[in-house]
Image 1 (tube, rainbow, N blue to C red):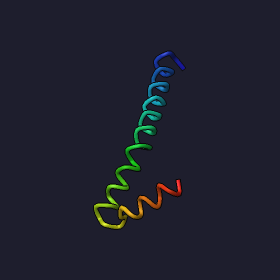
Image 2: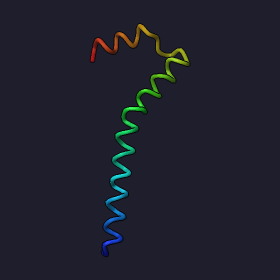
Image 3: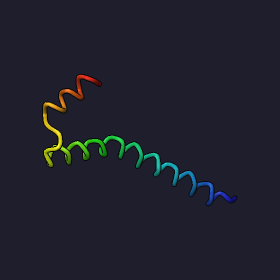
Image 4: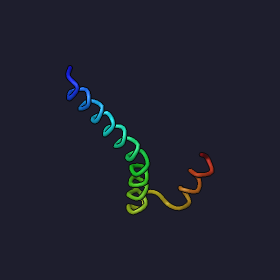
Amino acid sequence: MDLYGFVSIILQLGACLACFFAGKESGVREVVDTLVSKRLLTAKDLKKLESNG
């Protein structure tokens, strides 16, 4: 493997980790927003989940 291949793999791994950490935070927020907008989750449910956490 040459230097170009090694750098390419490192950049791909870095992009993968960045996407993972970004999705971990924003993904949960988007799911909760969707559930609230479809009225499958209420404010009372959210408070109950926060008290359990």
